[in-house]
Structures are given as structure tokens and as C-alpha cells.
Length: 286
Image: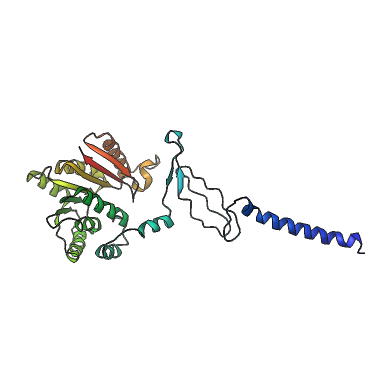
């Protein structure tokens, strides 16, 4: 019979090994979330504006898409915050016209252009309205205006206004490629001219994505040009999230904050701010 002094270290080693195996299996037995590399996920902080912490081991470092409002007056409502992976899923479910895709890829280096999901929403709003006469202020190279023009009827009319003549040249090339007709002009001057020509209340839809410090002036002109029941959509109302950050107080951010506040109090329109892209506010003229 082996002596106790020889067998005890061996038995101790065996018990320790068994204990390690049992501990490793605990997450599986109790419903824990274990990553492919064997490390547990950290519990996500799902309160609003507090993304999930990066995880350890081989777990994905992407934050949880779920966030929760801090304030109980919102009922601790859980909402989706788009992570890169989830946004890729959204984009994979966008029906993008071939000419739109070509234009987007040519100007992909720019962050000025609207995203494909935004363009699809604009086109959908135009179709729901049955719009025939549309205005866009702030065209850049024409991605959003082309998305709108593609769903207009043959009798439709789109006026695209921008102060950058070079950008408009790119837009014109793609309008021709898509076989749509768009009237071009220079922003503020075009709007004033349209009002002077008696075109008030004759447009169904307008999209505003121009100089942020000019938003209020452009909005007032568009409100005169759009009919009762017509829609005006304003882009960049969340402005990279800076409008909600009291530490950011540059001229454009302050201008957008003031514009959003005035729009909130403006009883001439019904409004809905949506967190698509850089934020859009959809206004219906009363």
C-alpha cells in the first residue's frame, strides 16, 4: 500500500483539477453568456448614452445595441442604438437604384451626402404624399435629390438648389444618366425668385440640407412655397450628437440648437424628429 505521504500530493492535484473543470462549466449551467474564446461577457450598461463596455478574451468588442432611458418618466424604455454591425444589416436592407449606387461610390469620401437609408426614407415620403413638385436646398452631388427624382411621376418637377456650382455639375451628370430632369439654381436666390414668381403653396415636398446657420431663413422660405399638408424634411438636426452636449458651443451647434427649439415651438407645422443618419425632423405644414 502506498504511503500517505506519497499519495496525498497526487490526490490534492486531482481535486484541484476537478474543481477547475467545474468552475469553467458554471456559466453554461447557470445560463451565463460565454464567448467562443471562453471568457464571459461583461454585463452591458444599457442606460441611455452608456454603451456596453469592451469585453475580455475573444468576445466581440462591439457595444450592445440596446440602451435604456435613465429618467423613469420615460418608463425605462429600451431602444435600439445602431452599432456598426447592426447598421450594416440596415444598409443590406436598402433598395438602392444602380445609378444611386454609382454616385454614392464616386463621392464616398465625403460625409456631406445623406446615407442610403436616409435617401430611401425621403423617396418613400415623396411616394406616400403622391408628390409631384419638390424642392431640395443643399444638393451637393445630388444623391438625395436623385433618390427623390427617381420616384416622381413623368409630370413631376424637382428644383435643386445649391451654392456650389461644381458639385451641381456632378449631380447633373447623374441626373442625365438616370434619365430624370431637374431644374438647378443657387439656394437663397432661387427660393426668393420662386416666391416672387407666384409659386407660394405650390410644392408638395422639400428637403433642407444646406448651411446650418441659414436654416431658419431657408425654412421660412420653404414654408411659404410648400402647400398645406405638404412636408419639409430638415437634415442634421442631431449634429453628431453635439446639440445635446452642453460642452460644445461652436457657432453651428448653437445655431442648430436654436433652430430645433424654434421648430419645437412652431405651431405652423406638425413635427417628428427621427434619429436616422445625423438626425432628421419631418415637418407637415398645417
